[in-house]
Image (tube, rainbow, N blue to C red):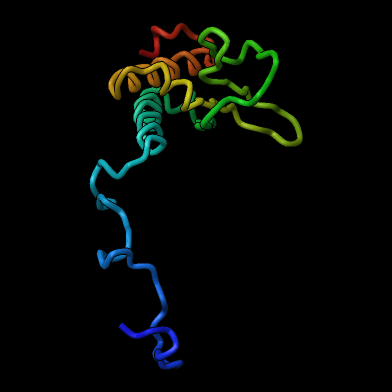
Length: 149
């Protein structure tokens, strides 16, 4: 191995960290393997599955509705009736559309971390996400949640 003083100036080799001669660190799992998916990506897929099934059945009613996921709810002292809560912790929020100059479409926001915290496993999380979305869509459409299930 050559020392930095003996290295030729135009050799083109960059110094990089190769600890103990084992190569550079990288991903342990290829990106194509399901194990490589983050919790946020898995949660987004669960939301998309439920939303897509609802949109197939209620395309006209849900045409302008936006669905979003946030990690945690915003810090508010008091939550309005548009927030679905478990105790004191918000799980989701329905933001009805605002007609006017800047017309905003209705939006349903799910809070990922509180929902993940309440689920025992991935199947339980899928059921919980489904139930919360059904509840919020029912509130938006003014129907009984049992009609949407």
